[in-house]
Amino acid sequence: MLEISNLHVKYGAIEALKRISISVKSGQIVTMIGANGAGKSTLLRAISGLIRVAGGSVLFE
Image (tube, rainbow, N blue to C red; front, side, top):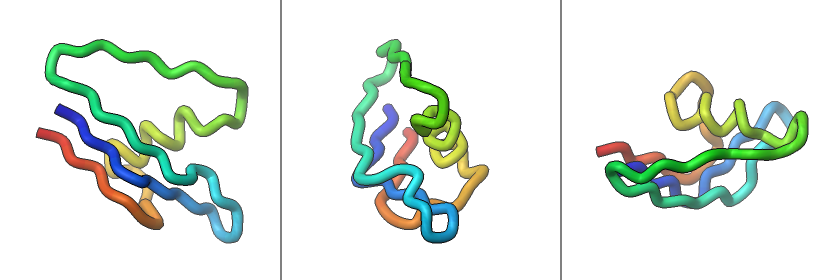
């Protein structure tokens, strides 16, 4: 299970992700779509711990 709650990511003064929340159950398949610069890669980097989050939580069980 993946639980993301109220996730915030900032690059300096720029707020890249703001209040992102999602719950993905074990075995569930999801996809992300969006325009260039929408934050898809930033979200994956935050989930994997490659970048520091400014707030919220990521729980992976």
